[in-house]
Length: 586
Image 1 (tube, rainbow, N blue to C red):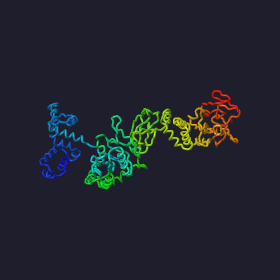
Image 2 (cartoon, helix red, strand yellow):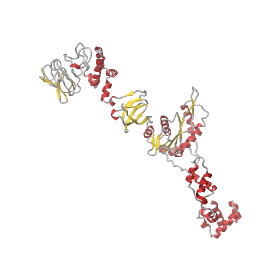
Image 3 (cartoon, helix red, strand yellow):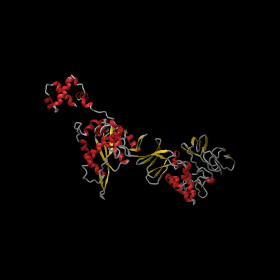
Image 4 (cartoon, helix red, strand yellow):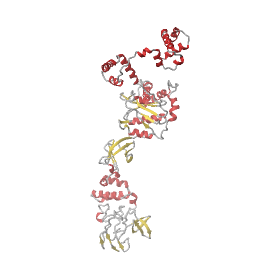
């Protein structure tokens, strides 16, 4: 139609004949004469023709062409297209059904086909995307995969080719890995960011399982927990492409094709025995691809555009790369207050039994999170069927039961060393019944809180073993860990029995005694070491002058039961005994 205005301009603004205009414009001279006649009849000059569009000018110069057209009943072309996609359906069949439906208002099969083809072309419309510098990084794996040959057996296996493309500059990164699993996926992303020297605002991956766990209509894409943690570490957001929508990541689709042509095709005749060797061979070809000038944008290369567009807009990388860690989400804590990672059991606090927790496993540790807060951490142990249990996670009853084992008590005494180890070894020598020694060690484990406390209580009364006596009745001495040698126990009747009382505080010191206080109770000790008082009596000396109450310490032939502040005291005295108190006269 553009030629109509040219013909009119030549007719109205020149004095050339119809034949001369026809020869110049390549049209029949009779057509030029017909147009000249119509323009003269309608009194049209160039000023009146120039504003008209081509369609309006065609209606005026060729009125019969438009008047002869018959209005047809238009079918629903979207329905026609959907039916045509079904197996066995042809356009001839669809036209026959259309003609039967509309009758005489229907168009011919030729016109039906012509209009359907016009509609089908409109369904192939694409929108040109605008990529801003530093905004998007497109990620995908190549369908064409390279090969690795085993140097011993000679067998060949395929590996994966990862491709990343920046949106604005189209700079491309390619790297070969073993698989598309999450460890390899995270490694590829980390290397891509290091290669580009910065972080984009968004990452646009495909819908592989390492990136997208699943998609739902209600919640959209559920991102893999490890990949989400990786994105948070690098301060970037993940925007997966739509499922079966390759045009959403057209940049990387083209990048994959170029990587196949410029890298894999050039290496097709080479044999590689390791992935490292393959990646070393790919590196110079990758640089050659990024240095190649691109047509349509001023023959600039990808590296040139990267320096101009993406490099200034990228966010800086973290100081250290991301430490890979795997996640398990929504794990229910069992009745044994343990969770499983790689067939190994790790404990959590017994108070969260039945709740959903998330597990994070790095190379060194396994952490448990509840509502985003870490509630347990263990050193990683991949021994199948093994058990990693912390005592503070156990209920009191389970913890007490766990202490009643020979291995536990023996290991604990050896770790403490010093007086505790010597005492337990001496007890084993003097008692043939191992159960009594085990019970004595259990009482030590339960009552001795710190090694420093026990060092304050070391004695050498018998000259045979450094020991101490637990603060219980004489009838329980053997069972509670007091070693008996020839009917004697350390300190008995020799002025050597001292109690380990780290909670006592010295109030006032005298020559050989000191007044000490425990809570709101006051006592007199035989000796004082710094701010700690050693309370205890030998022979018949009393700690409270003429009268002594509460049965604290050793009085005459009496026996000690309990320790200050424990809430239960029993004393045995030859003079007088009243319930929970003991009155002894010096």
